Length: 344
Ligand code: PHE
Image (cartoon, rainbow, N blue to C red; front, side, top):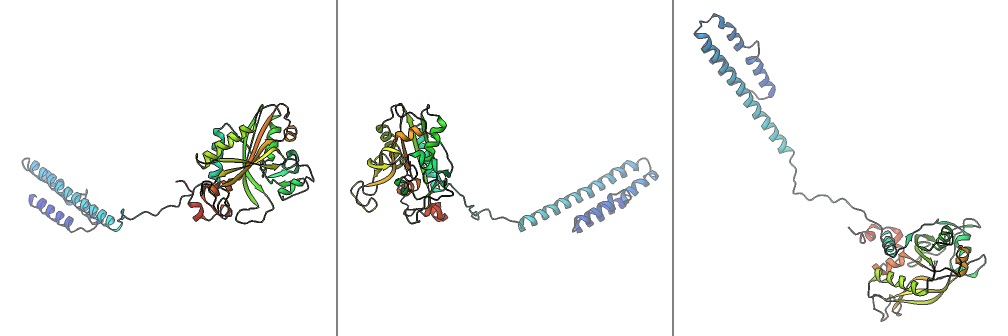
């Protein structure tokens, strides 16, 4: 019996060594260690043995089982390891290869400028207002001291939709709307950014659709020097502390007196160059003290309240700040242009 067991062990281990697949191994396991296997059979025949022989054979049979089982386990582990290595070898990833960059978007230059303007005025206590782009003749013109037939209506060629509706030609109607909303008794301190439309032929400095930021401040005892102070702060924050401002007399039907504001030329520092057309100054916005008629139509008593208003074009501000030479760049949306202004 001893020999038989030794033989079984040698035989089984030989088969384990020859096995090439996990199925082969499983077959060996079933054949030798299974309930119907030869070892179980040997153990079954132990009844015929003497008392002295029984434990000896029993112990040997267990040792043989263990030897076969551990050979099977070891071979199985080897096979699995080899399998894994094969897989790793075929699926290697070169982690040193450079990655493919994902294109990242960013705010449009115009959006950034408008946000910058908003931040500056929020810092001075202004709130942000909005108004409709399709506006009534009343708010776009009449409430701003431009009755029907007024020659100054020609300053802004308009896209009319009906006799009474048009695409707003400026953001000034939001002045009138805000006064109405505030009911003639509360002070106003607002800016309004938005799109405006004019029947202009597009070229390097004109666009039939562009952006404006309106400003309106109404309170008791508001003076021209307040307007100057606010605009001076704005110009310095936007273009740099070294910039000077200059107010020139001008005309707008809704302000009296009216001014246009220039900033000193950054290129020539006031000496005169082609950017400032040899004047040393560049015009950037229109402003003035709110006309008494406008206050009155808005429900504010001009004997009690006074105010100032201004209107600027963010495209122009961006063009001056970043040296953009054609307003059409803002709308043609060439990413090579836009990308230069992404703050990442
Ligand atoms: N609405 C004027 C324009 O579009 C600008 C402006 C606004 C002037 C407010 C004075 C006061 O030209």
